[in-house]
Image (cartoon, rainbow, N blue to C red; front, side, top):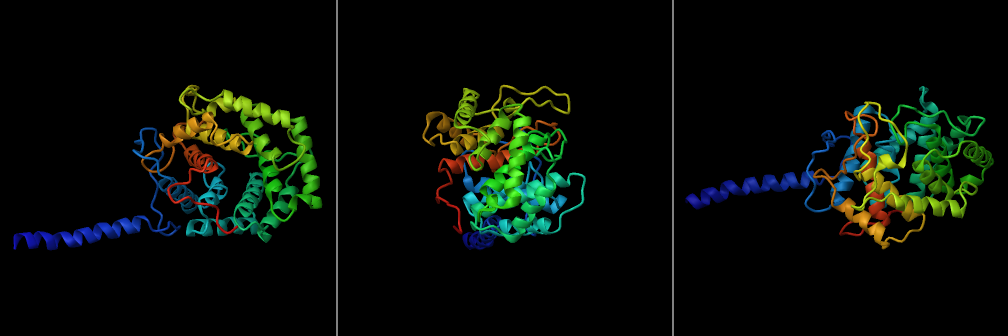
Length: 356
């Protein structure tokens, strides 16, 4: 009888545990996503790499940013849209966030950084269209056309400059993001009169404003793969060599080594340690440039990413702005997933972009 009492008491407990486990795997939405703990450098490293945990964090970070701030940010939820399709996009998180981005395209805000928002909305929607349906959505076309009305006569855009590298600090970043979005936009958008005129001005901007550091050059490489007249083949090869030359002995890259940025909090930069943004970004660019996935240096970088994932599924990246705001962790996680996906490391149930 005592055994039976224990057994009967255990069954509900097991059922509760199973229900909790199932709930934990329920697709995340704006309605059910739990608040995220702040990114911190002392979060434990996972025992085993998990792409599922990485994707769940990607969803949670983007959903929370929208839920809490009701806006999009370069270092947080814009990256979601060109990362999530590589591991499957027919999920509630993508549908809800995509709907909000389309709404912003249809109802642009009159804010002081409206040119930045116009470029990011247009480019992000275009990249997402290319990775999902392969068709240019009407809201995307409207956003791209509006983007050109924000372009300066010199070809650049008045960018958000909050000293938050690498994305919210200079005009050069905005010009390359604009070029990438137009270059990959489906349905031949780059051949429209507005796009041709805008890209001519972007090319002129790059000639008058040469890249200041390797991050600029790496972004130009990505743009040059979809827009002619930005970098020559020898210039692309030099970017590849320079990126490979910055790889650390442990296999990773350091984001801070890609630029010449100064911190806002006066603290010293860590020029020695590898980090997920630097590693994920470098591998993503190298793979896009044609470096094989099985190249030993690429594989060493992939091994670094697999052994530095945190318990929550994220990859911690120290802010290059200030130590109280490690939002770069969100972009670092996105680029880690991009790098892993580019090397076929999408997890045990080999995922591919859907809807193609």
